[in-house]
Amino acid sequence: MRATTLVLAALVLLAGSPPAAQADDWKDRLRQSASGRGSGLGEAEAGRGLKEALAQGVHRAVTQLGRQDGFYGDAAVRILVPKKLRGVADAARKLGAGRKVDEFELSMNRAAEKAVPVAADIFAEAVRQMTVQDALEIVRGGDDAGTRFFRRVTEDRLRGKFLPIVAEATGRAGVTKKYKAMVGGNALAGALGGGQSLDLDAYVTDAALDGLFKVVAEQERAIRHDPAARTSDLLRRVFGKR
Image (cartoon, rainbow, N blue to C red; front, side, top):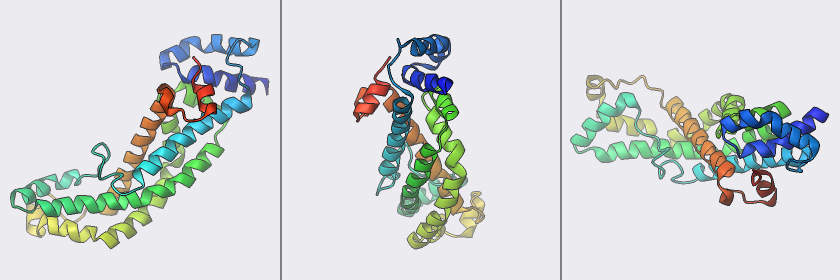
């Protein structure tokens, strides 16, 4: 129990440090915590602070992406025509069918935006089940360590939840119909390497997951380094220490 307390009391001191400094200073910081010269945070408060930071980051990411234009309106995560269809899309634009390409891309992004909100409960459960060892690895692992933890423990479940929602959304939005309209028939698609074997639902699901974890990582980085991103007294107390 004493070791657990020392680890969590040291989390606050390590959270704001670069990875190299974390490794160099780890033993010294533990000694400071043990002698009372450290942050003064107890096990419970330090643990709550780390969990609140992670929960805040994923909440912001889910809120940002799980609304209209969450994906489509953000160039960093917008879901584009699959690579194997880029030639088809370029040809369609040159032939004056650029609108069909845009409609196809929009329909995929709308499906992703529908799926993302279900991530909230899965992320919340991951935070609740986090162990002291998980917390230690997150603190020592760099700016995106929390995101990598979430991806490791939630990605399979998220994919399982996203896929049927994406499939329903793509069906309602007529994504396959828009895809066929974009390629302009099998001849054009075959000539340019498109074909009809692409699993659009799986493609959208994977792209949605990539975009979600990208934004989670951005939020985690902000909380670690940007004081303005710490919106509660607890976060300011825990992550404001150096």
